[in-house]
Image (tube, rainbow, N blue to C red; front, side):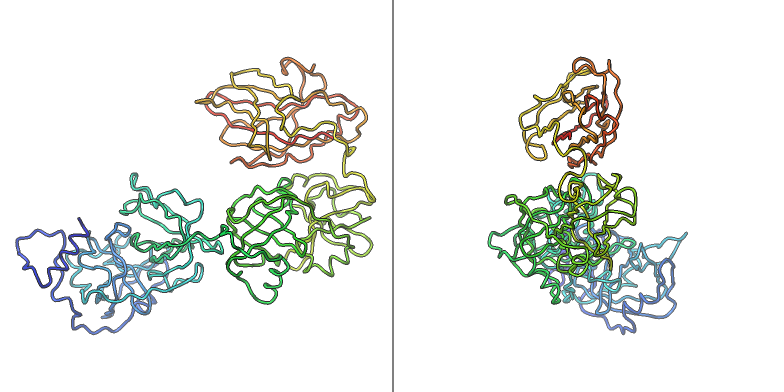
Length: 633
C-alpha cells in the first residue's frame, strides 16, 4: 500500500485536485515538480570536509547545495533518513518522519539549506542533522524539513559508480556503487537477508570470483528481510556504508540485484587444463588475474592431518611445478589425492612472497583419483639456488642433520648437508611440533617454501624424516596393530559400563570410508560410559613404540579420553584395572578430522599393554566422537 500511495501522489500532479480536508501521512509534494530558483554555493564534498571524525560541527555559513535522492525509507531498509548524492560525494540526512519516500522519491533533486545544521558521524558515516543533544544527533523535525530540504524536479539520472570489491574509499561512502560478476558466498545460501520475524539485522557476505568479500547488511524491518538469498551470479547495486573499519552495503530493494548467470568457482565442464608452471609464468610476467574457463590438476603434497599447513591450505604439484591453493574453508583432500581445481578468473597473489590462489571456493575443487610425486633429490645449495622455480614442490635432502633445537617447533631448527643450511619450519600446532629432533644423519623429504626473504622447507609429517640410506623415523617401522574400520569393530573390545548407547560402526563418515563412532544422544542426551579397547599389544621387542589415530567430533560434551593399562585382563569392566591417561591432538569440532599425532609409548617398551578410548556423556549434553586409522608400531 505504501508504494501504491506513492505512485498515486506523483500522478496527481495534473489529474487530481487536492482537498484541504485529506488527512495525509506526510506533507503533499510541492507543485509543480520543477527546480526552484535557488542558487547553490557548495557541494557535498565541501560540506563533508568541514567534519572531523568523532566530533560535531554546526554550519554557521549560509551554505546551500543541490543533490539527487538515491535512497529513502520506501522498503524499510533505511529508517528516518534519506541519502543524497551529487557529482562530488554523498551524505545521509536524518529526518524525524516516516514515509519519506513520498516527499523525497529516488531521483528527485533537492536543495539543502545547510546553515544551522549539524555535522556528525555514525561509526564512519557522515550525517547531517538538526542539532546535537547530550552527545547525540537530533533529526530534522518533519514539520520543518520542507523549509530546509526543498524538493525539485523528478526522475533525475543517478550516477552509479562501477567498482570492484575493495576499490572504494571513504570518499565513496553514501553513494551508489555497482559490483559486477558477484555472488553471495556459500555460507549465505539458503539464508534470508535478515530476520523479519524477530526484526534482527543481519550481515550476509558478497564475494567476487577472486573471493574478495564485502558485507551486505539488511535491517530486520526491511520488507525483503525474509526473502531468501539468491543463488546465481551477476550485478548488485547498493549504497556504500561503513561500520568502524568495515565497509558494507545497503540494498534499496531487491531490484538492486540482477543475478542472471551461473556462479563462479564451480566447473562448467569446458575448462581448459593448464599446467601449474604456466600459471607461475603468468604471474612472473605481470598477469595477476586468470583467464576465463581454465583449470589446473595435480597431486596433493601437503598433509592436512599433521596440521603443519593451515587446514584451509593445500599444496598442489603437477609434472611442471607447484602452488598453494587456499580455500575459503577447511578442505578434506588427503595427501596423494589427485585434485582438479577450477581457477577461472581467480586472482594470483603472494602471501609473504609465497605464490597462492587465495579464497578458492570448495566447489571449485574435486578429487579425480590418487597418485604420488617423487621428491626431487637435491642438496641444500640446490634448493637455495632454485627456490623460486622449486617453490611448493617436494625435495629430498640426503645424509643431512637437523639441529638448532630440541624439538621440531623450536625457532632456529635447520637442515644441513655440507652444501649449506636451510630453515626447517614447523607450525607450533603441528601434531609433531613437540617431537624430539632425530640424532645422527637422516634423509629429509620436505616441501619448499618461502617466508618474506627467507627460503625454508617444511615437513608433511614425521615419515618424511628417515635414517640416512633407509630405515624409519621412529619405532620399528613395522605395524604391530592397525585398523581402518572398513570391516567394523571386530578387532576391538567394546565395553558398555553405563547407559544404553554403545560404540558403533559408521560405514561412510570415516577418513575416508568407515570409522568407529560413539554418541550418548538418542532423542536427547543420556549419561554414558563406554570403552573401545585394543587387543593386547606386545611391546616386548619394540624399543620406541608409538600410537596414532585420526579423530573427529561435533556437538558439545565431554572430550574423548585415551588411556593405557598394563594390568587390564582384556575383558570385563575397565574400571577394575589401572589406567594412565594419554594426551593427543583432538579435533576442533564440526566433523573436522585431525591426526592425534605420534603418541610416544617408549615408557612401555618391553611390556604388554591395552589402549582404550573412554567416552562419557551426561543427561544434559553429549558430543559425538569418531575414530579412524589407528596405527601402533
